[in-house]
Length: 256
Length: 257
Image 1 (cartoon, helix red, strand yellow):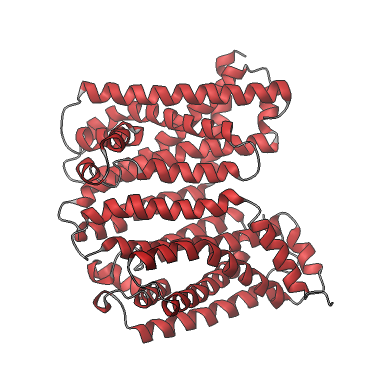
Image 2 (cartoon, one colour; image 1 turned 120 degrees about the vertical axis):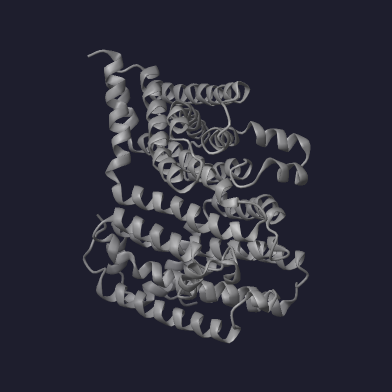
């Protein structure tokens, strides 16, 4: 029997650490359940249009959890530099790109575990529970996870200058990417200035593509082909940015 | 040096942390402002009433809650990193240390929400600056009570990452089970009576209710509502004081919690 490649040994180690804390795993399911069945239900009782807003909101919640998990992977990478673990990882006989892909796989697996039960609840309640829909939505979730994790790891070079500035940049970017997108509200209901900003935000396209797979009314969503092209472009761009950062920016640095 | 001046020095150190992370605080305020000016405005267009005017005071109180809880986060970090143990080695009483952290929680929450309140006063019509100034001591009281929640969290999260899970979970539950984002009439139409009562007595609901009616609604101060706000804040504050006292006593006597 041969030993698993180093990238998988590291991934198994990181996954064991990620799932060691049962309360965190349960927290995200609690978060979804509370936000969907309490906040979502009450807000959708106030929302006059669009109809059935609770499902629109629930799908946005899925993307929010995805975004938070991806940020957590990026933050973990930065903290590993702060704690000296990154130096150890860089000294391992493993290609820099393998280290980057290990981080991507970690985020994708954690996201899949955190998101599959809430996704199944939304699909079941909205009556679209079929294997095809499940697989296609999971594929989009995976692509979006890769894109956001790549982006967050690429941003880690900021943390090597100042951890405070990194936290501020990530929080600010999160605010922009979440508020100015279709995570919580359709483009049609945004003021024109906000809608224009949201059209430049790739999360808008990813979220609308996910909703398209879940059978939402096309009148509320962007063109699915355009959305798919933007999501793929984002994935490729984020992968290259992440690989560039890992290969050129992390050597010999520590987080301040 | 008297006990009081020692306590004030610890309060000063605690509150100064708030201003040392300027970038982060500026961004967090930016996040709250984006809640007001993006989320509030867009939802306003999707609802049949002026949701923007309803939601903005809610963001002020939500910001206060987050800032008050942040003091608890620092106490938790202080416990894990030995800072509290250092404080306990100083000539300051355990009760003094308890009050120092509760007062700094109150100040942190008031300063943070005071900034948000100033923005709310500037963007909402018919707001009373005088009533807002009169509200500040109430906000300080409420903020001290809310920081007491963080103390209770410290009591129950003895190891690992439990504190962060409890803090996040409690924040989501307290905000969601309040009238920050939705009026009580909607809650009454969806949830059973006992849950509605619970939501009405949530100190966040009482704080935001006071802001909406007194500062932004031009209504006179209702003594019953004021008494209820003070009472719930005092109950939380007492729970917080007892929790911090227990945690610090354990650390002083046993060396750990």
